Image (cartoon, rainbow, N blue to C red):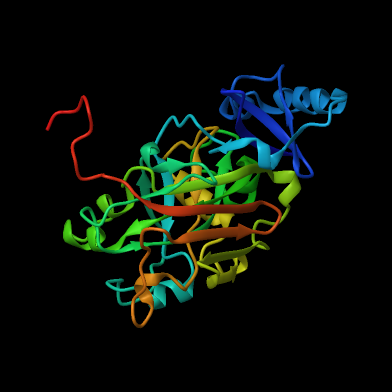
Length: 298
């Protein structure tokens, strides 16, 4: 099944895609995290409701899609340098590829929907970059999960665009927190596809298209560390829980590595596509991110 979160007559709803139409769910839990935490029984209830639905559904074009996961119980878990060609093209990387995955996190305030505007403010950063990624949704809790059973802990998959501020990644001691955590910059979606519908997660073609030009085009089979390895290594001594989101890294072609470098600007359209999942289509739009927000200390 392909789950979406959408707005229907001003009300946030959960739905399932059937072709290009949304089947609204009325009897299931209030959001996707509740469905995930509900385990097989919750999925069975959703399947029964969808099977009994006799309406036409809502055309996707008429349902405003939100990020499919709206409630995060921890920061989003992320992977860096997970494609050999991206590691080779990167600036400031170690002399040799790491022997283990490189992990970092992004805060929930970065997350936006699959068609929402990506916030852009040149006062905050001069180097806004795109990163098409496959994202994994954890469905079963576990710590120190063996690689052989790691995929059993996956509930589903979605797409993400890990928009990054390359100059901020360097000016704060070389660590990535600031350059990966600017508000309203990471689209996810358009849906979460259950793991049984994806099968092998190492057989998904990822593409990023900026203003009609293909910038990234690679298979997840090119990952340095596959999904099972990422889950096993990340969970070593650390509990993963249902609803956790894990980004798996981006392939080569980012703007920071091009000669000359090419960064996102106000008005750019960025499209991220993934086989069997769909696409993110977002416009880069100027926001005032540098001025203190209302109600916050200056």
